[in-house]
Amino acid sequence: MSVVILLMICSICVAGGFLWAYLWSVKKGQFDDLEASGFRILHDTTPKKENNHISNNNS
Image (cartoon, rainbow, N blue to C red):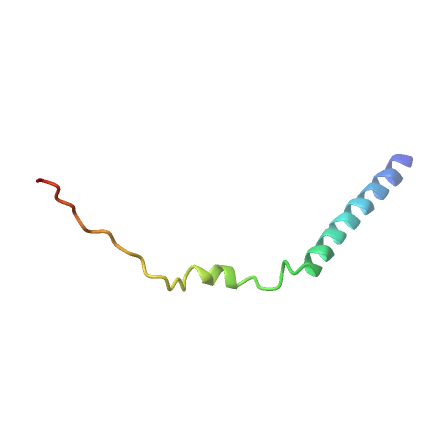
């Protein structure tokens, strides 16, 4: 019976650790804007330079 109590205490400590990590990440702003990173790559406005110039060095 004492093993069950020990496992319950350990599981409550682990659950408390996960709760603390979740609250810490919310406080630090990890979940503020989940959409911007995904759309940022779709709206790339910098033009790509194509280098189609073939140099002919036959002197």
